[in-house]
Image 1 (spheres, helix red, strand yellow):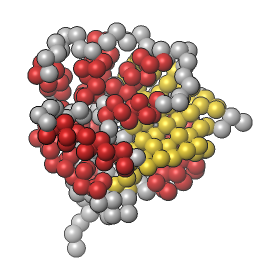
Image 2 (cartoon, helix red, strand yellow):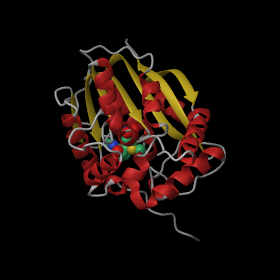
Image 3 (cartoon, helix red, strand yellow):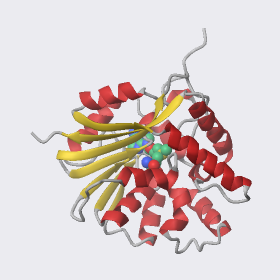
Length: 284
Ligand SMILES: C[S@@+](CC[C@H](N)C(=O)[O-])C[C@H]1O[C@@H](n2cnc3c(N)ncnc32)[C@H](O)[C@@H]1O
């Protein structure tokens, strides 16, 4: 009988996202785009610093209808190289704290944030979302974009986010959920093999959020939007342009093409379904 691969540790997961030369690679890409890497703009970074499906479009969707004031302190769980955090801080003038397992991502996130003059409002911590170095009820809102696929213990993950939120605070989640079509092929952008991929069905995610104390206010399947985005990207490339979303190619180099092909196929065959959920911590 074939042996199941051992479940990945946080170190294995961070290794999956670490190249050791991410900043140099990003600077080379910016130069190819005709951008001076010493002073990039938000728009110049957007194709690279939003490391989730549909790139900046998905971040705009996440921020839609949010009521965030400049005095609010927001948490980004699994903040990557910080594109979503910078988007929110810039749009709402709020403070954002990001936490991420991958040290190299945190370093690049801090560097880009300083270049964009947002250091006063955004901080990045290297750490595990399952044991965050934040006080209870510290944040006015929290979000996590395409992170939970790396997390086996979903209830512990959501409970830890619930702990650090103020009563009445909002929580928005986007993730790649397990669809009815069976397991996807690997590598994918979030996992090299099945041993570090923990997909839950939308119903399981709903139940896990509720069990962790959240009320789910709405949920949305974004598969159609993802397919439309992929078709638009293909059209841009066919017309001789660069794909609008280039974060996977930046981070994953050699395996990026296969990871993106597997992602597209999994979506089309119903192995995965991207979802967004809007939740709230009760205000007793
Ligand atoms: C696909 S990337 C998304 C990054 C970012 N949310 C974005 O959308 O640009 C997944 C991120 O989750 C982080 N991650 C995975 N497991 C984590 C954990 N247990 N604690 C904190 N971050 C984690 C990874 O390091 C990686 O940065």
